[in-house]
Image (tube, rainbow, N blue to C red; front, side, top):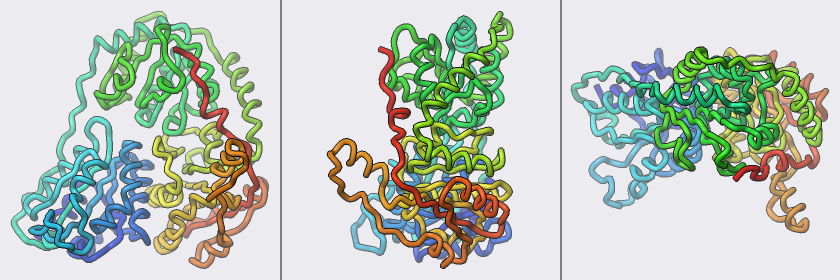
Length: 537
């Protein structure tokens, strides 16, 4: 087998059925191997390397399964850097296959096409695992190691390099089967201590991050047992159904944080410790797959390392032996929710559009947000009913990630309606991938809110810098005609009612993409509900 044949065969053996890619001379043998294996693995080719990487990221987030992309070295790698960085911050299992210059010349600075100094060193700082495939006999084993590394402990991305003259090299190959990944043993004493503290808590609060997405059943049950509100912001949205009165977003979570005596943090960096403060009256219990995470800011009262679902199940069982019956907080929480719903009414323009989206998006439909005014409001107020149906870019919060990532979400979940929301600024980062959406008949619905500016930047300049505006205005195409020029469906909606009708037509169309342009004016600031002050410590 060639190195490329062995690599592709190993990817298929690990369940990879799609390669997001942009071809080039360094990877010609890889694409020949993909052609030969096309019955088992398809190639979705994009118009820019960042599109391929973001699509793999979106597919990984939507499916919770490893996804892969392939690009050339040097500029190809660097063009995918933002997506790899985001995959790392979002704990997404994305495998990057990166070409290289001729093997014998790596590191010599001879000026080869796409040569970059210390490419391996650059890659290593973006991923959890990296390696170089040096021949066919090593390919399968390295793929197996990369796949295992992406699922071990805290999930994350991996990358493998291969030189231009190594992909086509032939040799004997022993295929390496998928490697087993073992979960750490659950600390039963820590479970008992956590259950003791939660059972005695008068004002418990559960905070969920992306690591809780696979533990929705357990979080829901524990919340009901303890009558503990569940705070989900961005990556933690959907773990507890928004229709449950105990499901809270950031503003009410801030209020509850000030009153809590025990916080259970599940699969989250818990930025609230830094932003909202902590004191001796608040005990923190951490559940995290990364053994280094719980004590990163301050040692918790209890730390439990491993997958959230089985740990929470043990905790629920331990609580069952205690008298933990709690009075229902339904009336109290509904009153608190109503208070914040009224306060959030300040964001009425954004909320009107979000209500239109929610009315048309099915319960299992997926919303992909973006760094935009409507996206900020969605993180605070868009109802989410199921896990993995609200996809937000994590702490990188990188403008322009949304459209291409949503293409990957929709491509990997063809049976599920997906809506991407973008501003005109963010959409233009990867708008060229409309060609990819049409070429591969990806039925994504994209809403572009158009205000002719980097709206958040402009408002900050207006409010904090005496209306001295600089570098915030935009020149845009007619987005409807832009999309139609690729062969996509497109229309314009000027208000929430028109948006509902446009969405109804778009979601009924499953043979290709739809773009909906929504002209808007300046929108009210959400920042008082996001950048909330310290309340403890």
